[in-house]
Length: 68
Image (tube, rainbow, N blue to C red; front, side):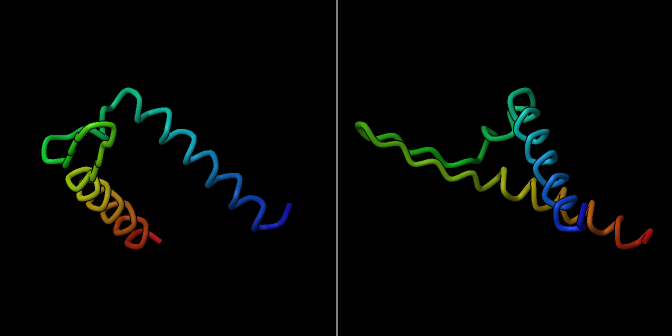
């Protein structure tokens, strides 16, 4: 297989695992996430979830770069 095919397979597996874990971690409903419900419309903006994911990814990439 080429490098691109392997990359796409790994990326798909990571997204699948992250989606599976989201069911159990309740990561998308943290305090501080903005939810506005009016009538039939719901607006959801996961600001705190975005910050947490950003911090975690920054730490992962920092350690990967540090030990590379």
